[in-house]
Amino acid sequence: MKKSTVTATFESSVEKVWDVVTDNNNCTWRSDLSQIIVYSNNNFSEYAKNGFKTDFTITLKKPYKQYEFDMKNKNMSGHLKGVFSQNGTGTRIEFTEEVEVKNPIMNLFVKSYLKKQQEIYIKDLKKALGE
Image (cartoon, rainbow, N blue to C red):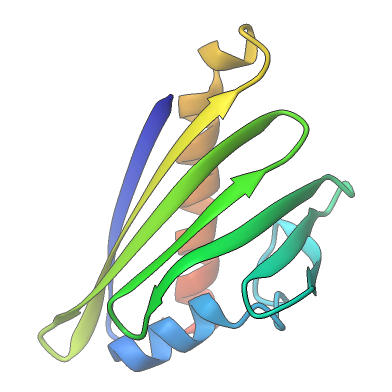
């Protein structure tokens, strides 16, 4: 398993950050996605701009505190843990992804790929929050 953690702080309230991050019916703020299809309260799929599909199952949702899900696609499987906390009047997030890739060669590059994806996500989230 490869692990990558990203932390970021936002000026927005923890409620606002939580609402944007956990709204699986709206992906317009995500520059890397073309669509999200929600199947139930706990299951959804994200489609990258190139059409690549990843399936998600929400495993824990403690409002304004913690959001976790399992993810899988044809190349990998893994888990993401998101921790939200008050930071003064703003919010601090810490997202930790652990993935296992199916192709041993991809294993060499997965950590740098995760870091890049996390950077894009944080940049998009800041923009969505108007920061």
